[in-house]
Image (cartoon, rainbow, N blue to C red; front, side, top):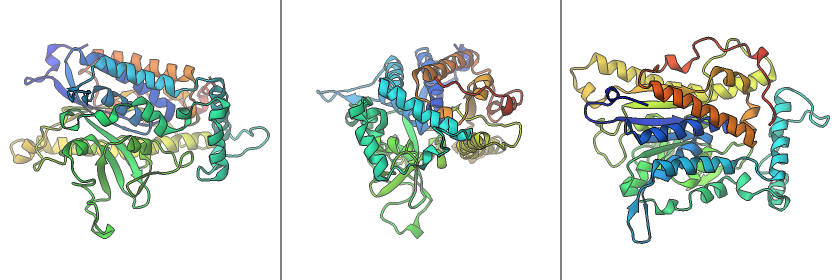
Length: 425
């Protein structure tokens, strides 16, 4: 995969990976991470951090959780292996898709409704938005409570149940021994805090919010409109909470929605020192940041149809917040070069940002509705795409492109009026 020239003089390159959210499109990241984890055995790079939002948070969590040291019955902390992470990540997504007959029928109905809505096609003779059902309403709650009796596994629709099932030893993590950092993005909706659930906060045993918006202060004395909180399974659930499909996740007085609205995925915190460090420095900062990009960067024209508007709106929400953080890294890199002989360069090292994205042909087939397609066939297609792309990308690394140029396709995307409609699998 790599040769010796790809290693720094003082050891393997330190890499952090950010996984964008995008519903079932994030199965692409499953394939990418699978191949990256295989590459860890060759020790050409050290995976020092993971971040994710929404479905990307599920990917980041499963890899991090699988590798994190956990105490056994004797109190000894044992770390997982890359092979463990590969198995757990893929098993989680195999379990995430529709498996029973009822789940398959429910997925066809749900995905079909989104598909019909974005194309303004009446469903059963009525053009009613699927997102019109209120998750706080009695009808929604009655339907979800009846699903298990109809053959739907509870963890299929209950995000917290799914995470508890997937991470049974989460409470056994030895936070003091954790070396790899994970960042999970969410949005606090009452006070408007951009929120990151950060494993470094757990390891430092600090009060929640320390180092960011401070706890127990009047809101007009907040240092920032952002906060870092301890990593928890409920925090990951918050990151995947679409307000039209799930009630806001409540954590210690805060109310949280999907992180798509703030950071997709979190990046800046990789450059903030862990809360227990008194000085900044740059030892904790990765040498390279690899972004697994789910949402295409460009469109060839202004969308006009309902389908294209929905699709592009969701893509922009997923990209613009991320690009602002990546662009600032580019600015710091420029300052690092300009002030190479000054203290600034000693405190802020150059960080190479790279993009891993699906092939243009598949990106052109996808739409907003396909993010809700939980069929096994569709998940397998996305996962296989991720594996193929990652294999080619890793084979060429580090002789691959860098951000911002590599975020775009080499040729402009084909007009979406000529796109193939996503298959209902």
